[in-house]
Length: 310
Image (cartoon, rainbow, N blue to C red; front, top):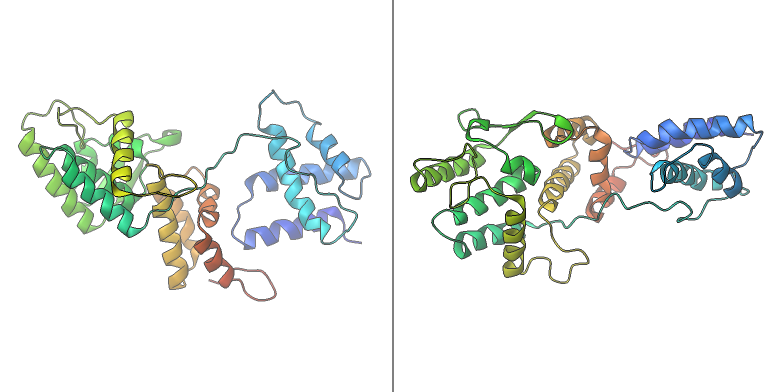
C-alpha cells in the first residue's frame, strides 16, 4: 500500500507540474503526514484533520488554522481518488477572510475609452493629460497605483526608458523598463506639465492642477467617475478597480506567452520581478484570474503525465 509520505510526494509533484508553487502546502503537509504517522493514523478523516489543525495555538481571527485546513483539504481531495475511505473536510470549518477578489479584466477598448474620457472630460489645463497618461502607464506596466503616484521626476529616466520604483511593497526597490512608445507619451506629458507649471512645488512626476502630488482617494474617485462615464463594468459581477489594471497587465502577458508557445515556467520569475512580487507564487495566482488562461494552460498539458509543455 502506498504510504501517506509517498502520496504526498506524488501530490506535490503533480501540483507543481500544473504551475503551482504550493508554499503553504509544501511547508505544512509534511508536518501533517508526520503527525499522522506519529499517531498511527493511516487514513485522513475529518476528525484527525481537525485534531492536527488545532494541535497548534492560534489567536482568534488568525489565518493559522484556516491555512492548515486548506492545505490538508487539497491533499485529501487528491487522496480520495486513491483511498475511498479518505474524508474531505467541508469548507467553512475554519473560515477566514477571503484573500483575493476576482479581478475585473479590462479589454483594450476599455482602456482606450478610459484614456479618451480622461482627455475630453477632465480639465484640459493638466488633469486631462495627467489622468490619461497615468491610466496608460498603469495598463502597460502593471505598476501599483501607489507606486505610480510616488514616482518623482528623477525616478523617470526618459533617456534610458526605465522607471525607478523606490521602497514599494515589502520595502523593495526595482527598475521597470518601458517601451519606446511609453517613453514618448511620458515625454509629451512632462512637456505639458512643465508648460503649465514652470515653477514646480513638488518633485512628483504626476501632479494635480495645483502642482501638488496626486492623492490616492482623489485618483480613485476620478477613476470611478471615468469608468461610469465610459460604461465600463456595467452588468459585471464585480466592478472595475484601479488595481485591476495591474491584474489585466499580468493576465494579458501570460495569455500572450501561452499563445506564442513560450516556456511560461521559465519566464514567470521575470514577470514576478517586474511586478515587484515578494515571491513568484503570488504571480502564479494570475493563472486562475481569467478563464482564458486556464483554458490555454490546459491545452498545453502533455497527455498522460500532467506536465506543462514548454
